[in-house]
Image (cartoon, rainbow, N blue to C red; front, side, top):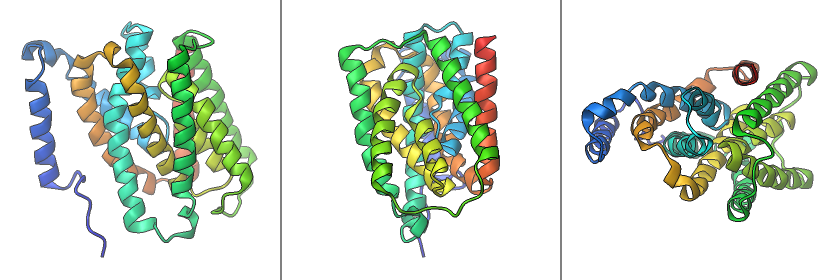
Length: 289
C-alpha cells in the first residue's frame, strides 16, 4: 500500500507546519505588519493562479500577468513577481504530481515516457531561458501585447483541437519525431517563458494532447517542466520582485498547487481543455480591448 503524501490539505501536520513557516516568513520581513496587511488579498490571487496553472500545465503567469498589468506594475516587476509566486505554486504542484506518479502511475503503460519527456524538455527550456537572459534578447513586442496575442492564439488553437481532432486511442510510446519536437518546444518555450513568465508548459501540454498522450500525464509533465523553468529564471530577475505581494500570494499558491491535482483527476479531458482555453481567450480579450 502506497504511503500517503505529507503535503495534503487534509493532513493537520502539514497545515500546522505550513502556518508556522508562513508566519515566520511574515515576521522576518523588513516591512511593518500593518503595511503588509494591505496585500493580504493577493493570497487569493496566488491560490487561484496555482490551481489554474497546476491543473492545466500552464504557468501561473496566465493569471498573474493580466492582474499585475491592471495594478500598473512595470514589465520587469510583473515578470519577476510572477516567477517568484510560481516558484511556490509550481513547486508544490510538481511535488504533488511527482508523488502521484511514484505511488500510482509508475507501472502504467500510458506514463512510460513521463520522465523522458520531462528530462528532454527541461534541458532545452533551460538553454532557451539562459540564451535570452545571457544575451539580453528583447521580446518582439511589449509584455502587454505579447501576452495578449500569445493567449489569444493558444486559446483558439485549443478550441480547434477539441472540435477538429477525432477521438483516438491514447499513445504511450515516444518516437524520434517526438524527441525533436520536445527539444524545439523547450528551446522556443524557454525563450517565451523568459519574456512572459509562461510559455513552455502551455506548449508542452498542447503538443502532448495533440499527440494523444494521457491528459493527466501531459499536465503533470508540463507542471514539473514549468517548475524547474521558473526556478531557473528567478535567479536572473529576483532584484525586480515585488516581495510584499509574494509574501501572501506565494503561500496561497502552495495551497492551490496541492489542490490542483485533485481537480484534474475529476475533470474529463475536454472539460479541462475548455477550461484552459476559456481563460486564455478572456485574458486575451481584456488585454487587447
